[in-house]
Each structure stands twice: as structure tokens, then as C-alpha cells.
Amino acid sequence: MKLEGVKKEGDWLRSEWRLTYRVGWEHICKAAALLYQYTEDAEVLTGGASDGSTAAVKDENDIMSLEEAGYLTIRGLSKILMVPVMITFFNQLDLVRVTVACASDEFKEADYKAFNLSMCQFLDSAELAMYS
Image (cartoon, rainbow, N blue to C red; front, top):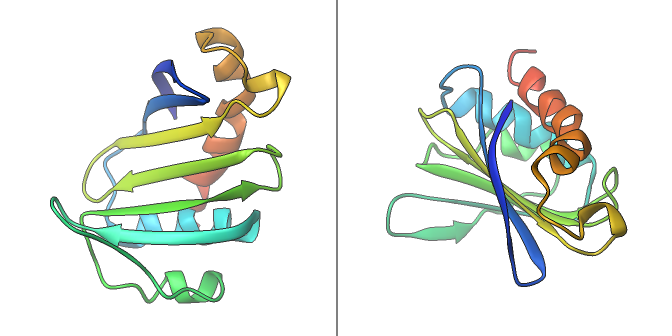
């Protein structure tokens, strides 16, 4: 994934990323299933342009059965990054929005280079999971 930009909003860093290719629902679910395994107290939300709902997900296998929607968001405490994170994938697009809590020194400032170094490998792993 390629970092398009990052900015600080209160106690959060909000960023936008571009996938290598636009992806469909199955690809998004595969990435979310991987992330679910490494997210404590994970919550999954799906919805369209004007609605959103929490999906009943007990494990990563449930994610693959979710009804197709306009977006899928997974949020919780990342066991890898050690901070709260929220990642939103958009169906049929190459856009991914990532919000990370400024809860560690690594994520205190919206510095493009430092943030990219911290997040790129993590998000590249999620993108690779889309094609497994």
C-alpha cells in the first residue's frame, strides 16, 4: 500500500492509503480476517453510503461469511502496533482509511516519513492476505 497522507486530529492520526489494485468484497474480507487475529477486542462494522452496523463476528471465519456491503471497518487494540487502530476498506475501491491512536511515542506526530515506516509493512501484510 502507498501512504497518500497523514494528519493529526486530536489524539488520533488519520491516514489514507492506496492499494495496488481496486478490490472486491472477498479480498477485503480476507484482509480483515487476518487483522482480526491480531486485534484485541476486535469490532467489525459494515455498511453502505448512509448506514452502518456492527457485524456479529466471533472469529475470523465469520468475516468471510459477511454480507457484501460498501465498506468494512475493523477496530480494536492492535497486538502488533500496541495501540488502538481502526481500518476501513471500501468495496470496489483502492482506498483504505487508517486511524491510529496517539498512544505511544511512535504515533505522537503526523510525520509522513516516520508514520510510513511504522505502518507500511503492517498494511502491506494485510494487502498480501487479500490474495491468499
